[in-house]
Image (cartoon, rainbow, N blue to C red; front, top):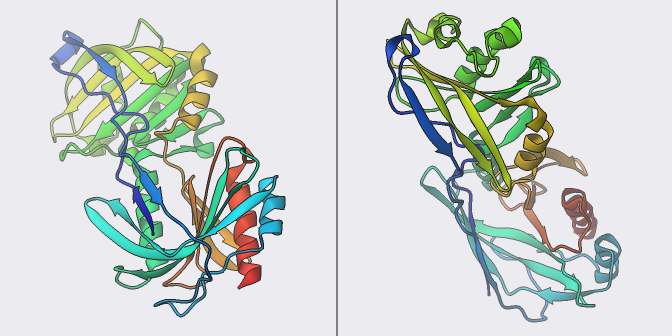
Length: 338
């Protein structure tokens, strides 16, 4: 029996800064340290035995590719273990999507670190398409804690979780915003970032930020500027520590915003740290042999059967660094064997 618990609850890839104390005219100040919320753990326990896998509720066979072909993709000799079945769940926003899967796994037989599994969802509790429900969960997680370039804002602009991070005339600028419900909003942060981009460094020079001027440039949808305050703090991402300073903005309708800056010479280090952090959620939409698919950075789902898709996972330091590409090639083998 293989038991897999995959928790997809939101975990901050760049926690939005919160500042205490604001006063009109920028007289108040606050200090904060921004760290990451702990990510939910994933626990996997597997017991396998060599046996032939047959179809289950899905009526589909959980196909295992030939070991020799898998070995070519993994880059070394492998042993195959046939799973008697397993169960797992995807959790998002308090909703549990449970499923049972069946298939096989491959691991290097020479002691190298690398494992690939190929399973098919056999039963689940989704209403309608399991693939659609799983993809919706992955997209929601990515929207909350993913990172993506914003090419339309410029070469050096990213969405990082619900923050917008941009390089403006040699200064790193972190912009966050929330509505009256105190929910962080990437859309509002973008609206606040756009006038900063248009005005350039005159608004966000280190050591001389005019918080009232920044607040006055917020879109009308934010409401009338009520108060501003200066702030300072840190952003910690793994080994990277960025010292920041900036402004907190409050509006009469309940909306709020934060604009902080850090030295621009840390830009490349920040991009690398954020991109490679285990806390950054990933989502990639794909098509494999004519079938819809998506990958969340650890697991590839392929909709060759709407209700009972293939699931491909991989892990190990000795596998190809491009594990997404590896999972795609394994999926192609599985589809060709079906």
